[in-house]
Length: 111
Image 1 (cartoon, rainbow, N blue to C red):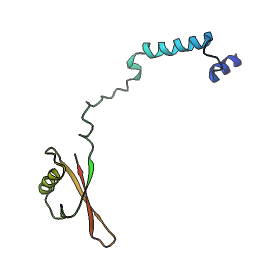
Image 2: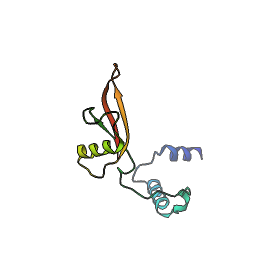
Image 3: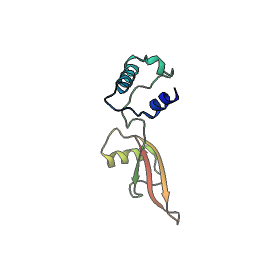
Image 4: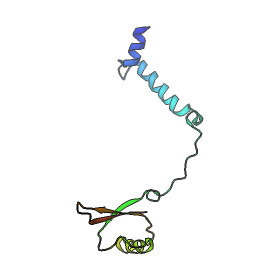
């Protein structure tokens, strides 16, 4: 009995044996005959959206285009000009400073 379990576990059978054929049939039966409800965890899946709709993309912008005191709508207008896309939405603006405390670049999160 132990020898049979060891042979099945470590699979020492060649491809042209009846044991291999039985295993293939069992695998195919499991794939095609298993009800989907066995694997359903009860959570509703969200509707598929466009890949870029839910993820913010960082855009690096020089301080010449955007300044620190600029309004959200003005930043959005300038980013739309820069990207040449009218549907761009600005999620957040984060200045990146150098060692002296001066703004090197603005990281603008867009969708």
